[in-house]
Structure formats: C-alpha cells, structure tokens
Length: 260
Ligand SMILES: [Cu+2]
Image 1: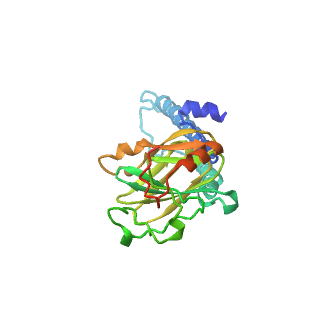
Image 2: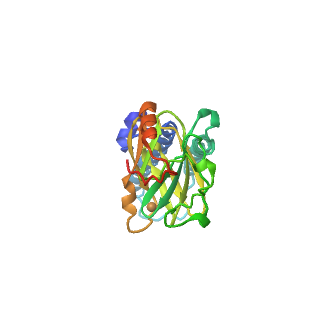
Image 3: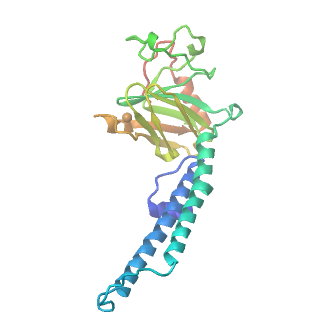
C-alpha cells in the first residue's frame, strides 16, 4: 500500500530505516488533504445549487441554524491532533532525538559545510576526532587541527563532497559550517539538518539500501549553492566500505583532500 501511494505521490527513493515512517506520515497527511479537497468541492457544488439566485430571490439575514459545520470542523481538528500527537511527535522522538548507543557501533563522521562543498572527516580506527581550534588555522591547516592531539594521529585526510558508510549500521554525522548557513539534505535517507557556523549539530540515520545517493544543500547559501548537489553518499556493503576505508590517506601523513 505504501509503495503504491509513494508512487502516486512521486516520493523519492527511500534507503533509510526511519524513512518509511516519514513517508507514512506524508501519505497520511495527503489522505487528510484529499478528504478536505473532495469535501470542499462537494460543498461548493451543494452551495451553487442550494443558494442559487432563482430559488432564493430574497437574502436570508439569519444564516446558518444547524451545527453540521461545527461537527465537521471538530472531526478535522481531531484528525489533525491524531496526526500530530499520534504520529509526528513519536516519530521525532524516535528518529531525531533517540541517538544510537555506542554498542550499536555507529559510524561517526564530521561534516563541515562551506561555500560550496561538503568537507568530510573520519576519525580513523580510534573513533576519536582531532581537536580543532581557530588558533591553529593556517594556510597549511585550514581546518585548525591541533597537531599535538594524539586522537588526530589516525584521522583520515579530509574529503570533499563524498561520504562512504556501511549499510545497515547507524551513522552519526556531526554537522557545522565554515561560513554561512547551509542545510545538509540526504533525500534518500529522509534527513535534513541546517549547518550553522559556530554550532556542532549531530544527526543520525541508518541506511538500509546499498547505492549512491545525492547530497543536497537545502539552504540558499550563495552563487554556487546548486553545486553542493554534487555531494555523494555511498552506502556500501561492509566489505566494500572496509576496502575503501583502508585505501584512504591519513591526515597526519599530509594527505590531500580525496574526491572519490
Ligand atoms: Cu550550501
């Protein structure tokens, strides 16, 4: 049923676990909108016939006497409350607020947006990212890595516009921006989060379909905004992911930004 309606509504490819619930909510809202649309059309036709000029030569100054419209309004409000309290709020609690625990071994990634690319950072085998601070920023160290931080020794060299993740494992991305407000949008994952300079905002999802998906910027951020759609999210099998990971140069070895 979901597949059929997703097709009718033209919903994009879905490749994350929680995304099915997002699509369900979109479909339920469309049910309600369809019911309202049909209801209003029927009422419009009724009003055209019931209140036509020939049958009503004199205006009625009293107006409505029945309570039907109140009842209908109450039903519509009730359906809206059910959608909000029964579906939207629990979905938010589960898919947004409830982060994967350490024992689920999430893939942790930092993404720093800039005009006009996504810079992607992996923490290496220790799972810990190098500290960064504005005071360390130089021409050779544009991200301000603290070179004395042992956590950074095994970090991977920064990547541009490419994220690899293994399938069926939770992913936590901590998002920030180097310049202006961007918005990190993975349509196939049903994830959107603003990237705001000065803030580190975590988001999470679990990809469940191997493939290559587009990363979009959902916040008009300047002239090259559309170019941020060149970002690609690769959802790999665990073997492919491990093989890819093993090939990546370390940041400490002076590895340049990688583009594949
Ligand atoms: Cu942008």
